[in-house]
Length: 109
Image (cartoon, rainbow, N blue to C red; front, top):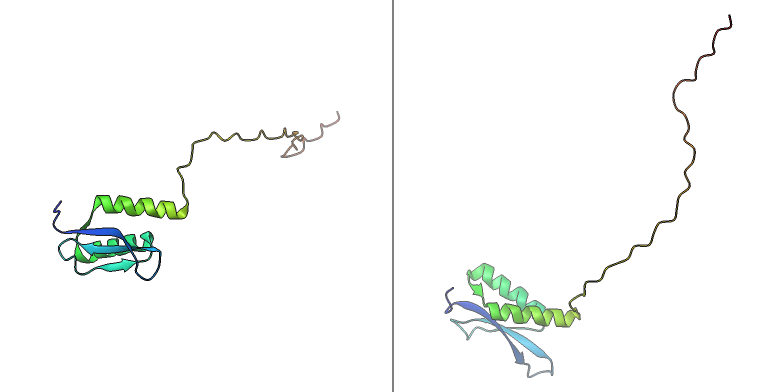
């Protein structure tokens, strides 16, 4: 992987509010920075740049963005638990109806 041309994303403090913003930029031209209000939007922008410019996204930045998105959603790693299915109630069987022709009456001799 060519490390001189990659897409990077970093957390930055906003001067206008107390919220953190994300900065997305390429390593070869760090003067062109794009700001995003959430990690999800920063990841979308990084993938858009990847498609348009043909550059790779830094693995470290991608992992950090994924972690922040999961934290924002409040997602935790689900624990594996065995789910016990309730036993079905016993079903009474109905007598089956006979299908087909009726037997012919026997001839009287």
